Length: 414
Image (cartoon, rainbow, N blue to C red; front, top):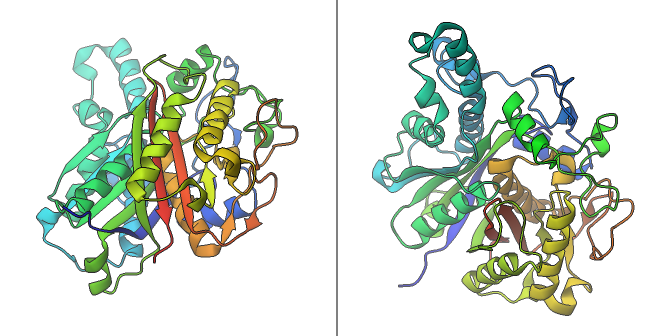
């Protein structure tokens, strides 16, 4: 059976760079950092005291006041970004049978902040004081569940949890549902909010986070020899996917086409990538095969690029394997995490949005803070400033704990 074409018709973003897609993208192109001191709690006892927080978001715009407290922040973010994407796609009038419209979102850790608050209440007052909304607020699938309820999406509805690859996997699986003829429209992407005491504390215990607390905007520095870990961030990014012919028939604005998806597992270590980048290499090649493209067709790679020594080097090795001589002679690679920080389960989705908009605007956002590339990191990482370029095909990589990998390819509409 021939795959149906899948296009992107709506975008919504909440991030440390802005509370809309337009604001986030403008700041990314300008090379601005969204990283600053953590404001949610007292960080004096923590080795890392910086993060990429969403600023000035009002959940009451999307929920009744009495409903706000029933949900964790990651669900608030999912709803806010979904509203923007829904409106952007021009879906005020439902375009399809509701059973042919679904929602798959990537969520890495769920309602961690809500769980922390309820645990404090439990310690002080016992089990009778636990909120009846704890479980619905905690579990990951209530982000897509609440979105589906709001927009009447009666097709497949679930969350994918695969660490930092969660939302990339969600987008890929949503794409497959449309390509295989099972759905006509999918709302997909991811949401995450783990800038909490346990979230930050847990990654501090792993010694995974940057401790450049006095220079937060310079803390996320992929491929740089002076990097000292990644920076935790939060937010949500949502894409509306539709079958091409149906989207065109209804007169939808089409941003780009989602042409490739690959997934793999290193099957080696719970937190570290395969040293030789073998899992990432397999994943990227699978995405190229799915899209029917050659490696030289890719204009640039939006890399996972978290700013960890092992991850940066493994991904660079994998890119060299997949792209051969083109990796150092024509291919451009960037890490937008240098500006946004790491949105964990929502990272793949916001980077898929950046890939899409790079095609529309003909510009590749920069990797900021890359002053001195470390040994072995010798590709064109688009340092410091955005680069004008006709962008045809973009690969976006996402890798996570457990050795899980995902790669997406977004292409200009042909």
